[in-house]
Image 1 (cartoon, helix red, strand yellow):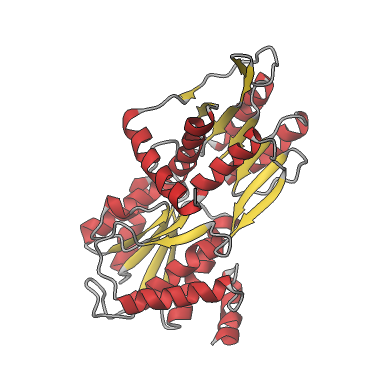
Image 2 (cartoon, rainbow, N blue to C red; image 1 turned 90 degrees about the vertical axis):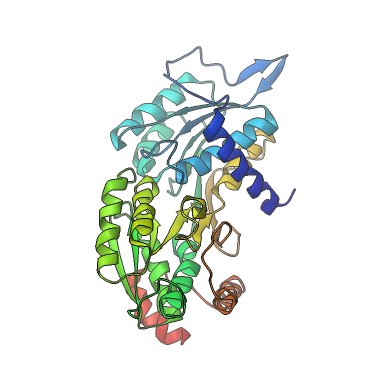
Length: 362
C-alpha cells in the first residue's frame, strides 16, 4: 500500500473515530504486576500508551492526526491502545511515569514537545521501556524522536501566500501585500515555522510583509480569533494558523471577515471551504502508524527520525478547498517544491537567516 493511499485511509478513519467512537479508551493508570504486553490466545498482543498534548483529542488538528494513525494501527495489527489527556504541562511527568510503572506497555508515545523535559526524566528511570515523542529530541537510548523540519512544513505555504497576496485578481485579495501567521507558543519549533513561512513569502515577493502573533496556548480558540481579527485589521488578507486548537478561532474569524486562513498540521479546508485555500500539512498519522508497525515487527529503533519535503513528511494540501487559485500560481509552487527536494534550494530555519538567504537565491 502506498503512503498516499494510507494517508487518505487515515484521514477517513480519523473522521469516523471522532464521530462514532472506538475501542481506544482513556485510562486512570495504576501500577500493575509488571508483565509486558497482554496475552491473547497464547500470543503476545502489543500494547501502546498514548499521551496527547494539552489541546486534547477533538482539536481537529495535531492530536487527532496522531490518534488516527494509532487507530489505524489498532485496526490492522490488533494492538491495545490506551490514552490520557493532560490538562497542563505539569501533568506530563505524572502520566508518563504511571504508564511506565504499569509495566505492560510495549510503547509509550507522547505527542507534544511540551513533554520533552518530563520524558527525559522518566526515560532514565525506566531504561527498558520504549518511548517515542513527536516534535522534540530527547537523547536517550530508549527514546525515538519523531521530528519534522518545521521550516519545510510552512515554506511552500509561504510561497503560495506570497504569490496570492501579490495577485489582486484573486477574490478577497487587497492591494496591500500583507499576510500573517499565528502560532500556539513561542518555542523553537514554532519559530522555525515562522521562518519557513516568511522565507517562502519573501521568496515569492520580497515586498510581502509578514505579521506574527502568538496565542500562548494550543487550546484557546477565542484568543486565536482575537489575534486573527487584529491581523486582518492590519490589512492581512490571509493568515496561516499554526496554533492547534487555538487555530480554530483563526479559521472562524476568516469566515466572519470573509478573508483567507491556511490550515496547519492537518487539511482544514473542510472547516471553511470558501476561506481555506490550502493547508500546511504533515504526514504524522502515517509516521505514528509506522512507529507501531516497527514495534509489531520488532524493527523499532531509538534515536532521531527527521522528515522534511524530500522525505514526504510534510506537504501543502489543496484538497477540499473551493478557493479558486490560478493554476499558474500552483505551478510556481510546485517548481519551488522540486527545487527543495533536489537540493537546489535550501530552506532557512531561522528568521535571522532570511535576509542573507534571499541574496543567495535571488
